Amino acid sequence: MIKDRFGREIDILRISVTQQCNLNCPYCHWEGETGIGPVMSPAEIEIITRACAKVGIKKVKITGGEPLIRKDITDIIAKISHIPGIEDISMTTNGTMLKDKAQDLKKAGLKRINIGCDSYTSSILEKTADKIKPAVTAAKAAGLNTIKLNMVVLKNINSRDIQKMIEFSKKSGAILQLIELIETKDNKQFFNDHYYPLKDIEKELASKADKIETRSMHNRKKYYLNGAIVEIVSPNRREFCANCRTLRITSDGKIKPCLMRNDNHLDIVSGIRNKILDRELNSLILKGIEKREPYVR
Ligand code: SAM
Image 1 (tube, helix red, strand yellow):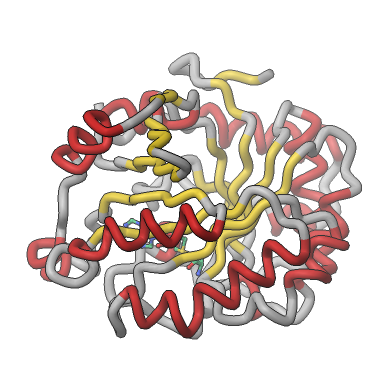
Image 2: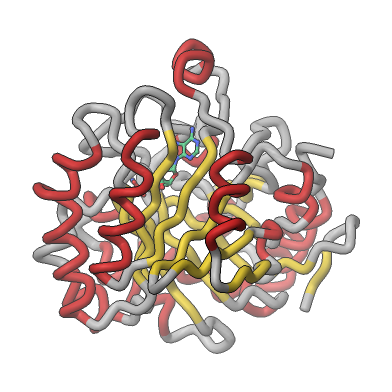
């Protein structure tokens, strides 16, 4: 297991595979991407993942943009699922295209899925009916396990729907992940209008929970409530960064040591295109890990 300079073990690789999305939510952090270069090919993603597995990466999360927009997404999953050392592949998706793709993704080696349900454009309950339910049904039928519902909680948009989402997640056997909105340079007004701190919700969950667990990843709390499971993701807290285990790759092939920073990226895909040696690839990854530092301290 490799550690960064702050003693944080790094075992997760979060790979963005596209900057395109069919929803374009106005608050989206786009995984902190600024690049405009061409996206990585499945073969390039495989090479980077293989090199990361050699330094101790065990889990891969595929993200975007909307990953299911890529026509070669099952090829990407299939390629990385065969890499020795990679034990887990998951994806975060807005779910709109999952119905027809869940089976193929599972066959290709996808294990778990996060389905977004916080869209700005319509109320969360309409989304539950039109988009989330078929996506969850398809994910279950395909055997993806676990299924998480990602809900960025937004004041005056979906904050009043939390209880209903807890009920829905319980019925559907999915874990509800309540996420605190992150401010970016492009969503400042939206953040001021809709930021909803999760402290009070956490107190309420803690008072009702049958059991509470703390995950090593981001020190996240997991509340078990009469059949429902709710996880809290608070990226604005110190313990989130102190317990971050993730190295990121942008869709145009840069190592991204931190979601919140764009001044320390490291080009890796150009090296691959120029056929650098394995040991040079390895040293680029180690350099990327060395650049990691907690954003909130
Ligand atoms: N399109 C995919 C999806 O909807 O899951 C993948 C990309 S999206 C950037 C990944 C996750 O980031 C989603 O769960 C989304 O809700 C969350 N997200 C986007 N913008 C955010 C923000 N400003 N603060 C917190 N979470 C955010």
